[in-house]
Image (cartoon, rainbow, N blue to C red; front, side):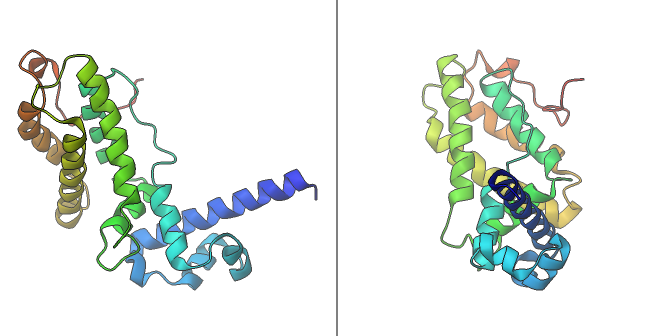
Length: 209
């Protein structure tokens, strides 16, 4: 086996372990997920796993950090509408995307690997702040709106909204809950001229045909 083949195989093995771990974490949570169950799901040996990850905690952190790896989020229109559309796309992804769902579950689980690590939250805060910076350049935001502060508020509000939806409806009503969230948040964010142009609806963020 050549060095390139060996490297490709190692990359594939690592990805398989993360996928299997995401499935088990999603089903059982961090504390309920056993290493043997993850190994069985991934169809790898313990040696292969510990080559890539020193512990279950390190594996869980990898799941959290890669939760957005396969997401196809809206890239237009730029600005505030895109931010709204991204949250609806995330709402739908949480209904079927195991890696994203596992990453979110690990991030909010009490006494879990994210207890003193907000890397996953910070990633989304940075992403949302970027969208808001574009919205500011386009003159869509109120003068008294702070982009960084609102990004923090949005991440916190979205996290709580998806958790409530998970508990009550298994994420089935999450797009509708996100629509309600925006109806209350937008007036405090968008300027009077931009507010009527922002479309809020559970169909937002769907891939274009």
